[in-house]
Image (cartoon, rainbow, N blue to C red; front, side, top):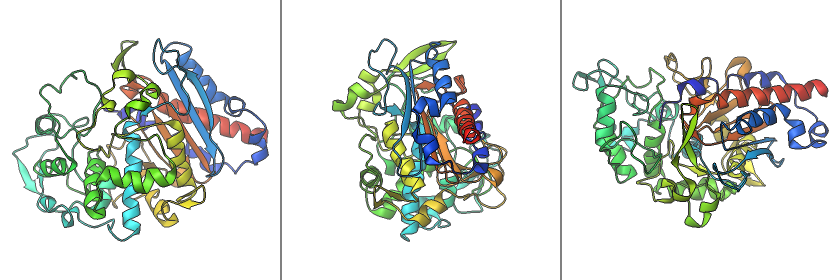
Length: 431
């Protein structure tokens, strides 16, 4: 996995203008096919697939919590494949896992099993006396005691001071890799810089080993992309008394009707799994073929920050649940209060945002949130080109799915947001 700084800076920046649009009459949208409703999105997908830049892409958009998704699909599951991409194709969504983990934690906050400003040492005592690097990404022996306890809020918002092997450099990055603190997977092939890496065997072991490594920043002071959502998976386990993956299956995926979202893809579903590519020098090199994917194996533990495979149909159901303020198809999956809180700005007051991927935005439960005139937008993107967001003010949900790494090789995240915005504003003008 690579750092996705460039593309994520453009993730939601173009969507803020949606906040100024009025809710459009349903009749305006119901009279046309998906491509007529979203011509800019269709052109964007054509530009990538027809030009041979990507083998397949699909976009899914919808309004409110009840309307079925509209999809625009182009291309195939893989180069040379004859199976078209569709709403049930399976994509490695990587960090789009984070909002799901964040909302799972919000369920427990709502139930009083967790508190936003609760020290995680209450549940994981090893985090009671953390040490912090004197110089971020500098020496891992020149340390000082942390002044502040890591809290649930910090894990949700990437302000815990924890590092990330795909972000940090120098000795701390090497320490993460040597210790096996790399919560994610990409390929059966050996990856550069990961020689000798051996993953840890459980989420509990991951949490225990992570606690022995120094923090990069003082908790609550700096937004820095991190393994916080992965550690939050262990907090959820302890607070709920259930394995993290079981909690998601029972409390989120089942009630939401998400039947194609897994940490491990069943062998019976392999025909739906896309191939993931490395975009190198204008070429696409297969790093994780669908038919022999590493996601067909049981992962060492469920990666709450980047571990899920999902379909556009399933992720749209998650977004529908959010737009329904916790309710979908007549079922209350989580409370309205939990959704509203989780999609609000949860950043600690005074957080240094100089390292934030999206300038001017806040951060909620595992996802970016718009502020000011950009308010009401919540979402995040994935390492392999996927992106998804909702806008509560206009009741819009949208996602784009493809598979290539690193995601900044193409500006898909930004261009998709801009295309959706152009189509929404265009329809408003036509109305």
